[in-house]
Length: 244
Image (cartoon, rainbow, N blue to C red; front, side):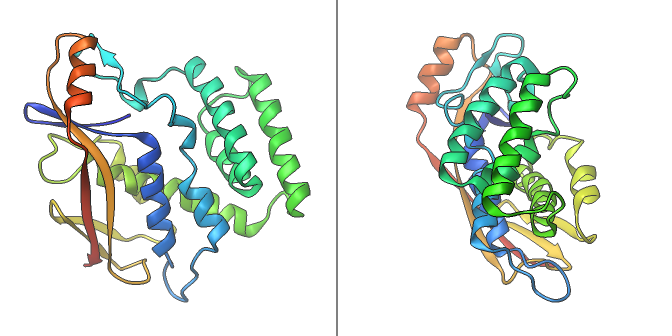
């Protein structure tokens, strides 16, 4: 669950919804210079990269230490390992290419020395996909898509966690967005509903939308959180991406 902290409330975004938002950004991305839009299979791979979280995010998990909601960053590696494996199994049934790119993305989060069985299974998954798709180990398009997933994943997090009204976006987010950009460009909030990019890496100005629920905080118990979540009316975060 993505948790945006606001004055007196929490705005909650399911991880897979954030993943679909990342895919929407990928659909419009052309980069800089000669336009190079992604093919549909690579957009799909980016959109499905957090499908593994769908079951875990059915309802938020109470954090008794803060009276708030457990964020995706609060999950431990032992909890992530089986969830990531099961999620990639599902993605592989839908698209071996998406599973390959998702597996490469998730490989950044678990140390192969601490999780050798996971590393072995994912190595086998990636090998299966490369054989089925006739891809080399260093396929340039796969590498470009993997790198763009890392970057647009962070941009999507910024849209979900930052902006006017948020108490504070994570301090690690801005530097990582800059570090992963294929070419340097700026992202600036003009309002709660507009982010300007300069130079502009998308095919045209466009709008993105992502569902969320907002609940009052702090909360006294898991039961209070469950009741607040179920009573909250789903809304849509809508942001227009414009030229700076």
